[in-house]
Each structure stands twice: as structure tokens, then as C-alpha cells.
Length: 466
Image (tube, rainbow, N blue to C red; front, side, top):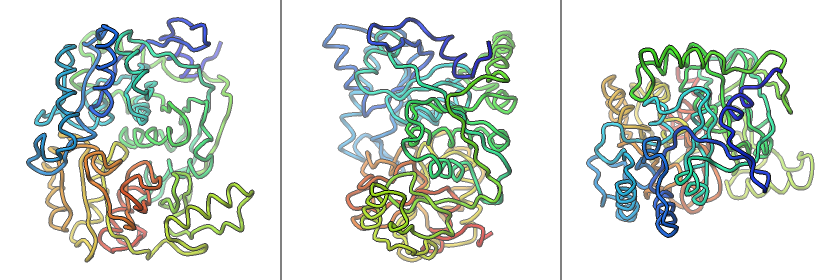
């Protein structure tokens, strides 16, 4: 019987079905972060339980860490208690911590792939909704809450209802300055923030096959914004070459055995999906959000939608609310809209290709007067690699700040926020009201669009600057 990639991974990790209908699924590895893990450690202590597989569990300090150069625990005082609790809980249970000063410290969704912790056909869990990011390597990942995390730590399994299967096929070829972030925003515009609810999403097609792994990670990062807990791309030779030699990846005979297995981890010809979506990416422009959810998207050359043209009352009211919060009027072009702050970073767009795309736009230019521009690499490894290529100098020469690795302004958990009423151009994944600070107006986009806004002082098409 033909199986989808999802079926193969799920069945290989299936343990049992609970009386409430949820399946118990074995988790191969999981990564914790300091914002939620300390609460799970407290729950374990109250029930006098330990961590079943500390050797498969890792801790990353990323959400509340300051990203200022020379940072310490107290650079952002409100985060210090989280950092200490993470260290203490991890030490008690024998869990390795990627801490401040560790050469491998960084955002969990960046560090886990680059260290080879996540492998094709594997399962992965993180107490963060963007765990789906690592699906770019052909893994099945789950974001989990604190209660779920406690259960995973104690048992090495997660209890979850088996989702249906969706396939999104990306046809065509991407044009200049059009990236995985633009494709992800286009999918969101097509299916909406609830379109993937109840599904595990496999992304396939010529466009995703031509993407580097970093682009696939970006694409899967936003599947949670589509309502899907898990998104993934089947592994191929590009994946295998990217993983080989990484610290936690198998080697020698183990590599040969793993590779033979990984080559079978693909959807069989003729396997059935519960839902199929096809998107033609030919002629796709760089995309940007105009509203307050990640599906409120138009081309960077587009205009603010008119609520009078909405298909129903609920959509009309959503557009009206978003326009009011964002300070926009129907029919208004986005190009030329002044901005106050630009943020390039997060688990969505903080890897080397992202920074290179931004640097290509910024090089030889200056940040526009009145604009604050921040660049924060996703891991200490990315930071070192970028500095070895001189990217940090390009950013600094342009007047942009260059930070230490961490989540930074994505959710503002470390104090990095915009000012009330400020218009922010951000390479992150969420543009909800007040997400990046009280009354902050966030537009999501890719690194090139963000860099173009930084040097022009307004939303701009990066293709006009190349």
C-alpha cells in the first residue's frame, strides 16, 4: 500500500492509542528553551519524576537572552531568573545546555538543524510553536505546551491526535529577489491562517526542490501560521549533503545505514492525501503583510485591500480592524510607506543565506535617517560564519546594529521592542497586534525587502536597488 511521508514517519514512531483517541508517538530528540522549560521542571519535581532520556534532550538559552554585544545574565535583568532556572533544572536532570558563551548557543530551531540533531524521518519536539521549522530536513516536529513538555520529558512520547494529510505543490520557478519567505507568505495568502488546521503539511514541487536547506527551513517555519502543527519537505540529496559531517549526525557505517533508510523516507507514487493545494510561483513578486495576521499579504508592489470588496462580513470586519490598527487606508500603495524600525533575524530568517541577501542590498548604502535597523544572527555559528565573510562590517558600515544570537525582537521576550505607533519591517513570523511592542505596526517580509526598507526609509521593492 502506498504511503505518504507523514504516514511512514508516524507509523515508525507509533507506540499505542490512548482511551481518549490520541496516539502516543515516540520522540527521537527534543530541545528546550528557558521561557517554558523551567515550568516543566517544576512539574516534574512535584510529581517526583525524572527525565527519561536526558541524552536525547537539550536546552537552549534563546528567548530571554540579551542580544547586545558583551551580554551577561543581567544585561536584560528580567530574563536572568529564566536563565538560572534553565541551568539548574538542566543540571539536575543531566541535560546539556547551550548557554551564553557556548560556541553553539542560539535559537533552538536554528541550532538543532545545524548541529545535526534533527534527521530525516525523525520526530522532534520543542516547547515552542515554531518547532515545525526543522521539517525542512524531512522530520516530523511538534510544538508543545508546558504540560505536554512535562509528559515528553518523563516518558519520551507525546500524546496527539493523528492529523490528516495535506500536500502543497509549488510549481514554476522563482524570480530574482524572490525567496522561500515570499513563497510561504503566498501560501498563507492562498489558504489562510486556518487552512492547514488539522493537517500535517508536506510541501513538494519544483520550487521547493530548488531551494537550499535554509530556504526549506524558512518555508516550514510558517506552516504553524497556516494552522498546521507540522510541516515538512521530503529529504533528498541536497538534504543528505547538508547534514553529513555535522556533530550529532551519524558517521561511518552508521551514516551508510542511515542514508539507506532516509532514501526510503519519501511519499510513494500514488499515495493519497486528504487535501491537495497547487500554487504557481512563476511571476511571483516579493511579498509583504499589510495587516495583523500572517495571511494578510500582498505583493510589495500591491495596495491595501478595500473591505468593501471582501467576500463576507467576517472578512470585511477583519480588514477594517487591521487597517485601523495599521493606520492604513483602502487602496493605499505599500511602496513608499515610511518605516521607523527594521529587524532582520528570528528562527524564520537569521541563517547565512538570509544575512547574505540582506547584505547584498545594504552594501555601499546607509540606513535612512530616522530608521533603527537591527540584525541578529540565529546562532553563534551563524554569527562567526557571517563575520568571517565580512557581513557584520557591511551592516555596521551602513549604520545597522549587529547583535549576539537569540530570538530578540521576534516576540520581544528579551526587551527588544518597537515604540508605540512605530511601523516595523520584520523578517519574523507573526504580525499580531502588540506582538513586537504595544501598538507596534509590524509588516512581515523577507530579508531583501527588509534591507531595502532600512536604506530607503520606506517600504521598497528590493529589485529596484539591485
